[in-house]
Length: 482
Image (cartoon, rainbow, N blue to C red; front, side):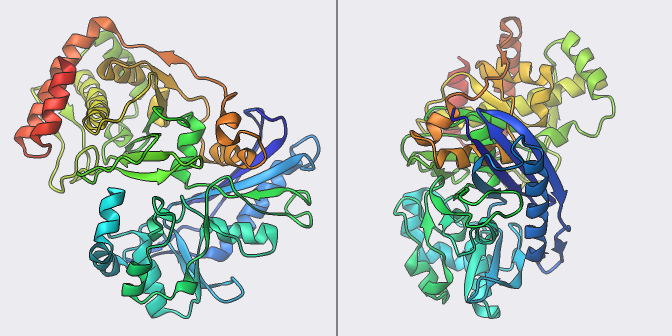
């Protein structure tokens, strides 16, 4: 990896973090909080965009002050933020509306109309338009505010750094309706929604240089490049090491997310996966479940239960540990609900069954990839808080039949720093990531595989019998178990 220093900025909902990285190693980090979004029953979800820059400036000053050269050695910076957060601005690029957050629903009716207006385009992309897509919020801003343009969070921050307006990257623009296959805004859709052409920013590929800092700002030196980043989810995927075709990462946080890289676009007829565009032109398919770490997070005795469950071995009971109504990946069904097959003998078996249930969901997601013809290279990468549990990672490896390599650094800000470095490194992102440190490898436990695959088959059969997965996916899952 290049020995210059790059800085990645992660603008999340609750706060901002910055990472200074050189040669794959984190040199310094800093964080600052943001005011909580204001949410209301009418679907509003807003944040004050004027709070973003002071928080970003604070973390940049802190992280650069911790470097040996006090920031003089920083060559590039890139920004990652929540997907789908937008703000209406005036002709000078200053906010004239609150930031409409990724979960704001005021654009739902416009999004429903956009589904029809762009039906052929969405079919080619193999994706749809969700009720909370930023596309509809752009139309809402056009009709209800004085905004003359819209910007995503990174463009607001990058403009402060460069002193001039910058393009959006095609990752942050995706949920605003940008077509990464045709590499254009869907003009027919926005025209049908009454959105003027001038409201939309130009779009470039991530890792493209947007400009440079002309005078020192927030600890960054003049001449420092400002590089197009990606959304928080994509940046986290890259940080985990899923950078080249065939590489996938299972991110086990509050919920489970599977993301990876394919050489070409793989449309998903079921609609449970959608694809971002890789900076090098490949594709980044992924999906997010409603099941995950929250299934076990309410116990204060997790370490004790893990130890007892490890000694116990595979559970007789089979659990689908969904805590809320409805599932969205690897199958979509609004009435899906958690269940337990059999009677766990005690708390330990129930805990083990829940851990296995999330692993079954991951295996089903991998089987969904298989039915779409998507190759997955071994090892499967693992990230997120749940991957810190050795037992859970071991179970996931055994159920999937794949070795799992736990990513040592899967932070969004770290991924943004890699994107920044790709802006000045010959060979781009692949060259930057070639020297990333590798994490520990967890192999399947051969003696437990047969029992857990029997439970996986029971799990899949129950999902099919309830009408939540189709016969094709069930058949693929059963065949792979054989």
